[in-house]
Amino acid sequence: MKITEEVRISDNGFVFNSRTGDSFNVNPTGLELTKLIAQGHDFDTIKSLFLEKYELDDLTFEKDFYEFIALIKHHQITSQEDPLDFK
Amino acid sequence: MSKTKITIAVTGLNNTDNPGPGVPVIRSLKESTEFEVRIIGLVYETLEPGIYMEGLCDRIFQIPYPSAGSDELIDRIEEIHRREPFDVLIPNFDAELFSFMKNEDRLLKSGIHTFLPTIKQFQERDKDKLPEYGEKYGIKVPASINLGSQNQISEIKDKFEYPVMVKGKFYDAYTAYNTEQVKQSFNKVSAKWGLPVIIQEFVKGTEVNVIALGDGQGNTIAAVPMRKQYITDKGKAWGGITLSDDKMLEITRSLIRQTKWKGGMELELIKTVKGEYYLIEINPRIPAWVYLAVGAGQNIPEALVKLALGQEVAPMESYAFGKMFVRYSYDIIVDLEKFETIAMNGEI
Image (cartoon, rainbow over all chains, first blue to last red; front, side, top):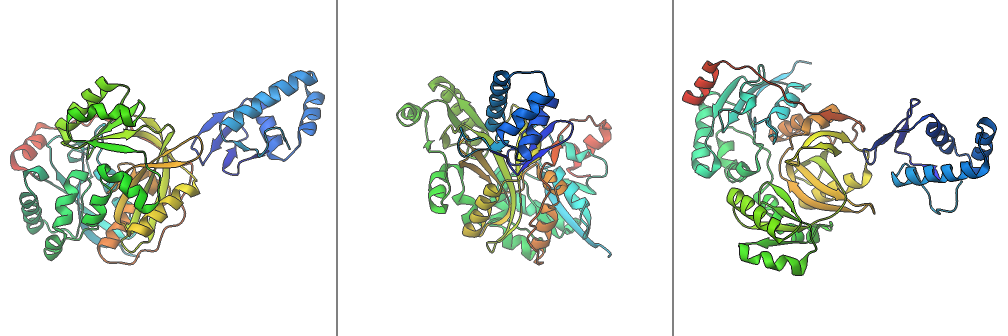
């Protein structure tokens, strides 16, 4: 999965997709996740970074992570060939 | 570099909730780096806001509606030209274009330059011929039928699923969810714009638009895609944003290349969730949101004037995406004398 090249992410959490004209506000956690994805980190790396930094368990992270991924994919912020293959 | 002094006549000063492109066209021309423009505003109605906007037009003249007859309109244009000579005429209404296209040579003989589509280009993109147009130029269009009378409304249910779009030949479009609503819209549209009334398949998706300028040789001189962000109840953009969408540009360039489109145009497209584009309409003139294209780096009215004068114009390839426009309403206080002058004398 990667962030579509037309997407611009500002440090304050404003996400703009210049292909669709849509814009979104993401909260600090969402921004952190989006940036990690944009940097090309894989699922395991992101998970371990989050578990280290925040007080949360594996299951909660996975549930929230995939919910967030589904949301940003729906809004065409990311492109993903295989829905099960997160890289 | 000193600017070339030029006088340009512009119609469509009705900057209302259904805005004509005249005012933004004039703003764009005033920002030209090559021309120092003098503007002759041509109006149909005495309450067109452009008449009263300070510093917009140097002179204003009232002209008769094209429905009064082409000759009457052109005679008036020539009379105005004799009194206040102008170099280029930019018409901005669909309904008046035919008269100006038909009289292009006559106007040129009087020294009035235009840059309009040919009658063939204009007529083949008529809304009631869109399916043939799509097939000819290889672009997806929604299925449609033309209704010549109310009796044909019953045919809709055999061909389409509701909702459907009910459209006038020139303007107006309504979404109808059942036969009753089609009847109501049919009456509204036919009373205003005549027959046929077009019933178009409803394509679900996001409406996106491209403003473009063709040089008449198949080259795209300018093209900027936009998405409406705020739409009025008349379906007009009250806010919009430029997009970075190569597919939309490709569709535009292909269409201009094949049709050798001459003049300004607006493509209205629906982008479906699958990423397919359906052409729903081609407006054969500069649209009212043209100033967004200027803000994004392509001064289309300036380029159109150069083409009208027979000058070479290099295609504009780049523009800023993510540029927005937000329209607003504004009250101008007008002295009665000004209204009286235009109402009684037909000019200011």
